[in-house]
Image 1 (cartoon, rainbow, N blue to C red):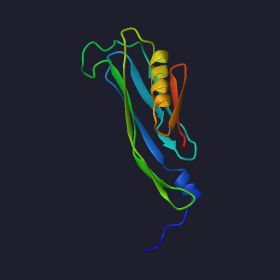
Image 2: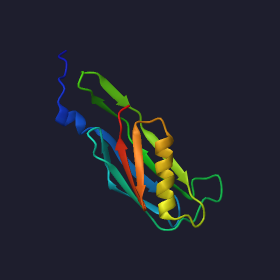
Image 3: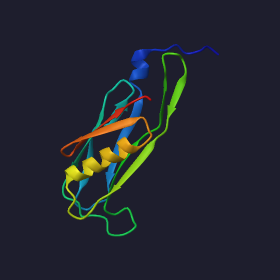
Image 4: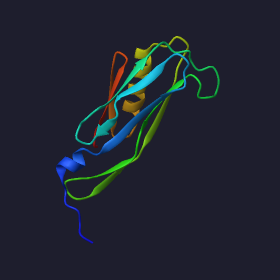
Length: 131
């Protein structure tokens, strides 16, 4: 079996697929840029509306984003496996889109996964950060 060689264009384009879903009646999340790459391309999601909020233990009143699993080769030839991540944010009645974007950013930035996020208004930008 022949060992693969490192191709930076190929490897830096690899990354997590960003998906989103809303389980709130009045607040939505839409993916604008659906890939978070090793090479620094950010995933972007926009949140809109005022939340109805979570009223029980179900997923009703929650918004979720998912970052898929992926593998990429490092320049030294080793392969890194990046685990997927499912992030669910419960909302409060009357919660603004900006507050929900900030809650996602806080959850991502406090985690141990190789991602960092910034909320600007109701827009959420997620980048991959190798540790």
